[in-house]
Each structure stands twice: as structure tokens, then as C-alpha cells.
Length: 174
Image (cartoon, rainbow, N blue to C red; front, side):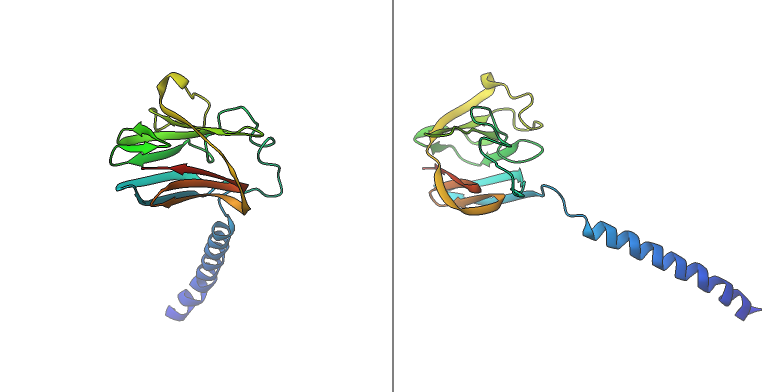
């Protein structure tokens, strides 16, 4: 009798194992379209944290295409990128008080880009961006760089940069 129960249970457990293995394999194969990342580092004596969604180029025209010139861009994917500093800092020579901000850029085809620190830190994209809530706006000259397939932020002792496609936006902090 005990042997009969074991033989009947075997197909059930085998089937359950196969189904769970298939579900786990499918979940592992799903790569987020724009993984949510964060970087933390020290610049000019302040601890800086940047949290962002990291979209990929995937063969698309990014600047002047996917992200049009002259329009506010959330500087990442999904929610607006956030920028946090634990101390007052000078960004491109202008004071930014300690706090958490949303971070935006306005790309242009040639010349300096506008870099924005907005007081409404948690917001979805730039859909409800309100210029009247900007804490600070500075102008930054983009630099040509090697290809960055995914949007990446790098923090150094002198500031940070946003790198995507073949463009780097270096922002100095003192």
C-alpha cells in the first residue's frame, strides 16, 4: 500500500518540479528594459547619491531623436533621476543646499546644455515638471565620449557626469 502511494505521488512531484523550473527560467530570462541603479560617492567633501533608471541605446538615435533637443529630459528612465547631497555644495560655481532633488537636463544640438536641480524630488519622468520649483539651473558643455550603451552616472572628487550614447555631461562640484 505504501509503495502504491509513492508511485502515485511521483508524477505529481515531477510535474510540480518541471512547472516551477520553467517559471523560474522565464523570470531569470526577463531583463529589465531600464534597470534602476544608484551611485554614491564623495565630491568636494559632500556625500552624493544619484538614483536613476538606466535605458539602453539599442541602435536608436538618442539625442535629437528619442530625447528631443530643447525639451526637459528626466536624465534617466521611468521616475525622474534623484540627486542627493548631505552638505551644501557649489555646482558650476552656484550654491545648491543640502537635500534631495530631481535632476533634469535640456539637451541642445550645439552649445551648453541646461542642468536642473528641482525641489520636487519624487516625480514620474518630466510629465509634471514645474520650472517654478527649480532650486538651481546651470549651463554645462557636453563632451564627445566613447559609446555608452546604457545611461551611466559617475561620481568623482570634482563632480559627476551623465554618460549615454556618445555624449558626456560633466558637472563640476566644489
